Length: 238
Image (cartoon, rainbow, N blue to C red; front, side, top):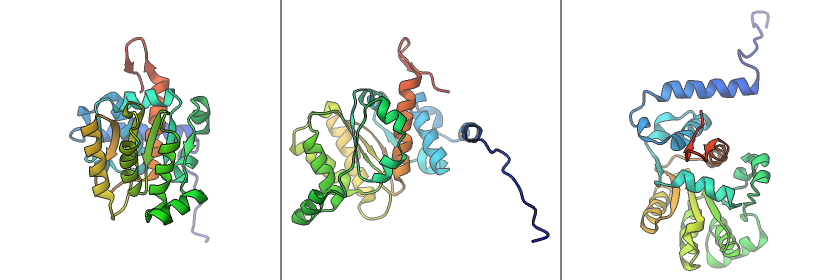
């Protein structure tokens, strides 16, 4: 104990730490091949995903955006879209300030008694039953369907959207499940759906992902609303 010297963090203010982190990300990411091919709006998401995970290659090598994904995300958030998610971890991570400002209700039915019964009756996971119930309930509302954990959520999302004949112009998918079973296949299914039906979305292909990455992506969408230059029709984020 006598030889142990107590230390304080070099940076100890939250805002300063965040700014320094993004400065370091921007400096390092410039050397990665392919980064320059992304739009400024897409880069804003990528940088937040890296800030959340510290993983440069996993994000850059696997992130997929439909051509209009970021502007669709901005538009749906502004239209008071329901945020239908697969885990309450996403709800916990989202900024209450933004949710209240844009009236975006977070819907997660995974722990509802009705969902337990549906899952048992239909021999599915609760994630599958939860999103099925949510889509049916809010089928006439703008929806952002966001998955950060359970790949069965993706299958239920696509199957229910098609079966219920939901207007896909009011829908966007954020697909970031993590794991081994059904994960890669579910993302492939999701990407195929987006491309075949002209639906907008963002997919992190492969096994990597996390609920925190969904949160980071949605926060990037809110940041885009704040920094979007309506006069020139472009993102002015720094």
